[in-house]
Figure (cartoon, rainbow, N blue to C red):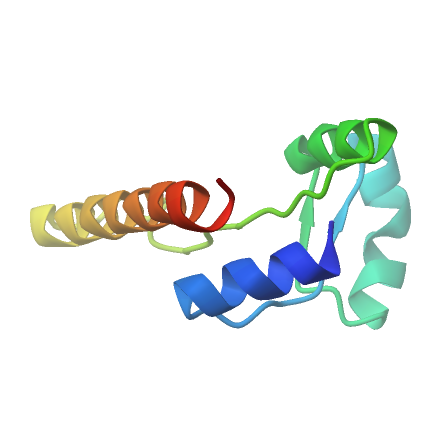
Length: 105
């Protein structure tokens, strides 16, 4: 991920970046999970790995936003909690759209 783009995106969204790692397979994730945790990595992701690999290959900057919550897997969510999650996801997607339109074009 581009440090410059990540900083710009974090500032625009008013979020604090956390150390994340990307791997391209579950095998690597399982193999290095302890090492990554000991290094202070807050999250491990596989899906963005291809984006970062390809952007490096074509010499383009890239960044990612990881949205995390422990509420999604809770089977006892109230309708209000589900709506709150939906509203926050929509808000984030609109913010990302605004970032792309206003900061990257």
